[in-house]
Amino acid sequence: MSVQVCIDGRPAREARAVLLKGGHLEGAVATDVLVQSSSADVLQFSGPRVQTRNDHGTGCILASAIAANLALGGPLTESVKIARRFVQRCLERSAGLDNGKGRGGMMLSAER
Image (tube, rainbow, N blue to C red; front, side):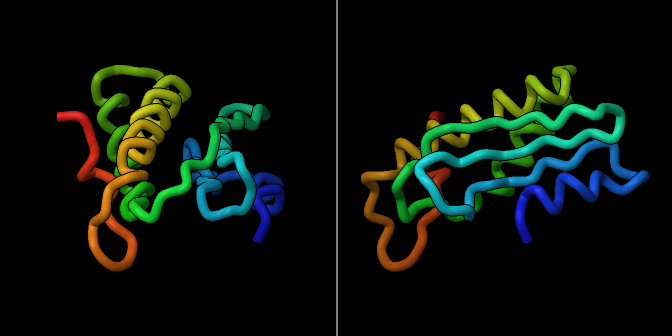
């Protein structure tokens, strides 16, 4: 299923917003798409794809970071931007780590 098909479907009436992650799509740029039921606007958040095997948990960490920013009173769009920057930094720092076999967790490289 393409991102455009998902966008055309719009969020369900019960959902206020849906963030479609583009991390598993191909290309040099990773783009996430935010669709809100209260707006006709479709917001795209893009950044360079980081080549790393240590990308396990990116979706959960992104969602948690968005939720944390919202809990602090931040607006949704800004919370998504802040969370994406956090995940981007974690991925960049994890690129050189050797966590053994398979895909490692990127939080091993997070700021403390």
